[in-house]
Structure formats: structure tokens, C-alpha cells
Length: 71
Image (cartoon, rainbow, N blue to C red; front, top):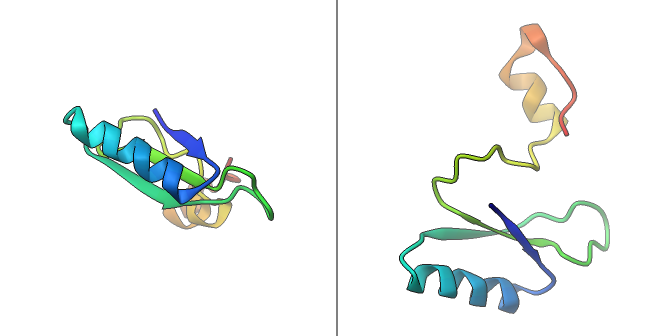
């Protein structure tokens, strides 16, 4: 589960809300493209879902024998 926000203030407020309910979370600045309107990503720590923003270069260096482009 992850959510995107337009400002660090909104993302930080969501992180505070998660922490208040006992869920540890992290906030990252991960624009999907130049001038992304929602560049701040908030996700719970220990979330079992795959990271939706792993770069193609990272995917290829992790498993060189079976290299595939990233998402």
C-alpha cells in the first residue's frame, strides 16, 4: 500500500496519521517524470508489496543472467 502526494506537508501529515495508529511509514521523494504533480511517495515500512519504482538499471544489475527491463 502506497500513496502519492503533491507536497511534503501533505505527505508528512499522512505519515503522522499512520504513526498515530501504530503503523511505521516512510516518505520518499520519487518523481515519476519531470514536473510530476505528485512526487512524494508514502509507504508503510515492512510492506510486502513490491516497490513500484525500481529502475531498469537496478533490475538488470540484480539478476544479470535473466535481465529484464524494469517497470
